[in-house]
Picture 1 (cartoon, rainbow, N blue to C red):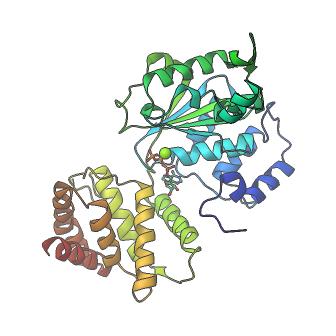
Picture 2: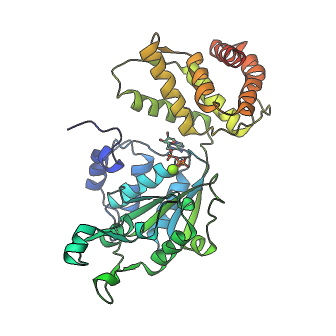
Picture 3: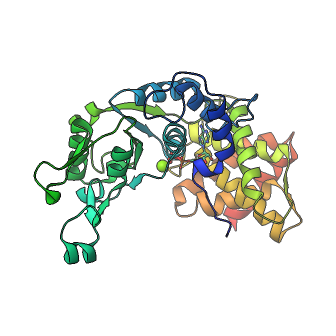
Amino acid sequence: MVDVQREAAEQRYAAELARLSEGDADPRPRGWVLSPRAVRRFVLGDDALEVSQKFFGDDALVDRCIVSLLGQQGLMLVGEPGTAKSLLSELLAAGISGDSRLVVQGSAGVLEDHLRYGWNYALLLAEGPSERALIPSPVLSAMRNGKIARIEELTRCAPEVQDAMISLLSERTVAIPELGAGVEDRAALGFNVIGTANLRDLGVNEMSSALKRRFNFETVHPIADAAFEKTLIARQLQDRVADHPVNADMGDDVLDVLVQVFRDLRTGRTSEGATVAQPKSVMSTAEAVNVAHAATLNAAYLDGGTVNADHVARQLRGVVFKDDPEDARKLRTYADTIARSRGRSSRAWATFYKSVKDGLDG
Ligand SMILES: Nc1ncnc2c1ncn2[C@@H]1O[C@H](COP(=O)(O)OP(=O)(O)OP(=O)(O)O)[C@@H](O)[C@H]1O
Ligand SMILES: [Mg+2]
């Protein structure tokens, strides 16, 4: 067996799912592998069962998503990039269906067939249309097996593909005329759809009002609570670095700088109440984890092992602010004002300030 980079949620958390299922005495909708209560525990954590918290910051949102999936309407998660829409969709599918892999990745190249079915052409030519030659799409597989299908970035699909989605969601049937008149697959109990859409993409292919009526929309916001965000970043950093044969420490003060910089620039407001210019670059939690990860690997493999605010600043400069001079100016102004003044009482902030300044001057 090789070690894979990223297992599906139901594999990664197989032990947690097994424990949740074992003790699950709550009512379970037909077609679901867990009760709604157990699904919530899977996503939000349960200390007694040693189930980890995976989605942070909005418990009520998770409840609404679960309720929405109990009904006949699909669930559409919308929000800024990197707010864990895909993560939440994967966790819900893993908890509800035990399978998060029935995914269609939305793009301009997606055709209607990708939502319905295709053919193994060698078999089709040899035998004519048959069940054996049919290749069901993830959506058709989900319908047949009563599972959750996931459509990522639905707004990147062409309008006619979105229309095909409408008929799937309202008819809950896929007709397969090639196999004979009247041959169709009706959705089994448990079938539903979770879509995700990035707010920065909206307008690429604006969602039709018909489609909007078939989904319950939920907006996923960036994590509001700084302490929560910090915990999350620290934990995910630990997970990611665990794959490497190195030790690296990111001290609390450095982590604070990282979290604070992202929050200040994301919201355009510092914790002291000062206004700062918001860059166009995505300052999401997901991006913060990436920066923390890269800074840590840099320190671990190429430096002394201790992550300092210079590593963080370098990653920010290089990765987040790389190709927009306007953004670089905003970072510089932020450093000159906010970071510099915080640097009077914090070494990490002083290092951060100096690193941004030297990097952008040089
Ligand atoms: N509230 C949150 N709870 C848990 N993880 C979060 C949260 N917000 C952001 N993250 C981070 O975001 C990562 C997942 O981002 P994901 O790809 O799901 O975002 P997305 O909203 O789908 O982004 P995009 O719009 O770019 O597709 C997580 O692995 C985690 O690091
Ligand atoms: Mg996504």
